[in-house]
Amino acid sequence: YRAGGLVVTLCRDFGEFGALAGEWDALHRRCATATPFQSHAWLHSWWISYGQEGRLRVLLVRRAGRLIGAAPLMLVHRPMPL
Image 1: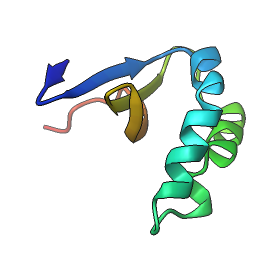
Image 2: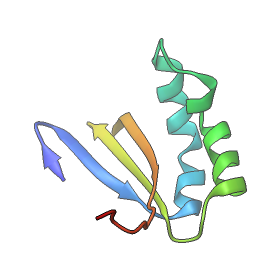
Image 3: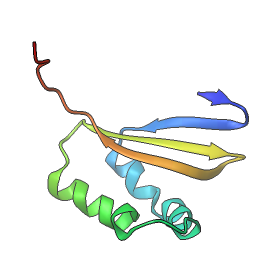
């Protein structure tokens, strides 16, 4: 998705997520309010421990090729309550 100079992509591949470490760490360092739980190392370890195959969803936002935002998510299927 492209809008206003931003490019939004979806990462579903664990190997691709692992390869984002350098970019993710640079983004983490630029954010004054970032916590250790938002670091790539912590999230990568979490996914190894708790993630499920085929459910990784990481939204990545770039401007001029530079990572400026990321949202690590996991697809979960649950019945809708009636």
